[in-house]
Image (cartoon, rainbow over the protein chains, first blue to last red):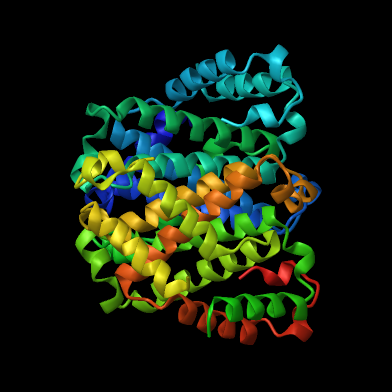
Length: 114
Length: 114
Length: 114
Length: 114
């Protein structure tokens, strides 16, 4: 399955339930944020080290499921906005590469902020 | 470019800047949430109708850029956790299909909640 | 009960459970975001009108509880950072008043965005 | 200034700009989440230790300002919903105290999760 197939499946899921009426960009952005909130809740009390090992812990399956939810809503949001997710990410990455030249920001978190 | 290529490019971007040290799952989940927050800010005062037409407005380019940022951090987070994004979404969608049978929930937002 | 009393009660709640060790500003910011995500989930499929009437609906009690959770974590975060919540809000409101003179932005959402 | 005074000032700020029309609970919940996203962005690359000392760093003023913004939108949201913030938090804290008896959860983050 590739990204286009996933988009089609998510769209079909909505159509079969007659949920397109709820899937405005505004509502889907909120739903995306709600799922990201659930992902944060899985990580909030973990140390950095614990978060790195989380997939080998009892929480691993829940983290994978939350990431799946986030992906579903992101794919659906991009679909209703007619945005190509890969293209949008590629263009933003190119912009960030210009903005943060490796030679200037290497190893600095302070310079990684927006 | 496909999803694997994007993942590799985002990874290379981090490596070239020696930013892997900051890219714990915990930190990346926060960064993902921060970007989703910027996306919400683009939508917050729009009516449902305005949000549906947002890509044809002056805000369209910013919305696409924010969605690009969200995708970048989601891809990076899945990479450091060694999670297949498509697989995680597909499995979650299958679970939701069992949980919300179309015949029972058709047209009902109340039943769309988790 | 006033804001100082609430802060003291939230602090005592953490101390009695020996949870101060988890209450770093970073972790509390994530917990705050997680609770805001739950609040968004309550509102995500509502129309503007439905959201205005939400306290008179079956969802009202849950909305109030989520707002209570958000307040608890915001109060706790401000406590560990030694920030006066009222003062921080008052100062920011004064700054916004200078930045958005009423005569210039009246009735315009476009101008309400940062 | 107390919480009621702050609520009144935030309300006056909105009225003077004729922004009540945008201040539906749904929109305000999104704005609240957007501001929390900005707060997360301030913390995302910090270690636990750095976050504990953040008010003594160059980022301290920005953290205080973001917390001020979060408080403003939370107060405004509670106002339009006619929810008493202190009461909602107090009731939720009492519920949590019943749900997480100190003797059972002491020192355990695993048990602090919902």
